Image 1 (tube, helix red, strand yellow):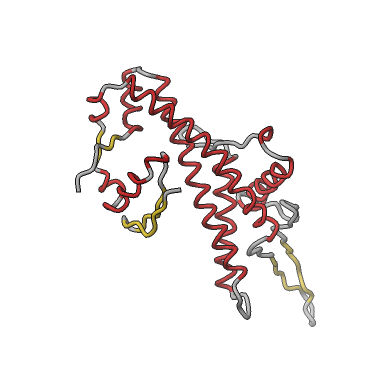
Image 2 (tube, helix red, strand yellow; image 1 turned 135 degrees about the horizontal axis):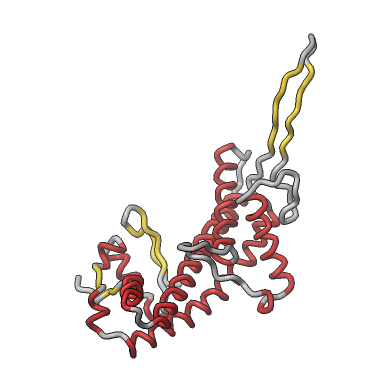
Length: 251
């Protein structure tokens, strides 16, 4: 199937940087890419939150160790993705985030946001024993000794394991849609700026210089079609597994 020309804007920005040309366009490309990537984090976060909610509401006789591992993984991944998209700062070479602004949020939204970040900073990314993070003690460690009946002591330790925390899940359910709307608005604004700059300032030959085969990059004809179908909204999302899209969506 014949597709229109796809060009690598990151490669274009690097090319312009080598020439010392178009600093505003290079900056606009970087800012639009960052917003799109953060939006991708939030959509993956939303998937984790949805699956976790389905898991904990399933009817079952008992919570097996496997189920607890899955739920803990979904909770941890959701919190980390949310924080990575909306708060964490990036060192040189890192993507960084699109930070949410307190002035544009309701007080209860900001409270939810801060408590999710506290869970990430004090319970997921780091370990603070016996410290409350998001209304919950995530890490309890007891290092102890038990006296033996016939003398001496046996040394042991015990730690808690939190599979999921209901208030944190509810905060994620409330805040992920809020964050998606905020960052999507910035993405739309930034991608419009790039589109405008490309139309007036970059020669077609330079754009075509960085063309690539979309089927090779995105893995399949179906993936490319999903991207092209999303052009009207400037956005398309799909899952890729071993180069094959297993689900496609135009948000």
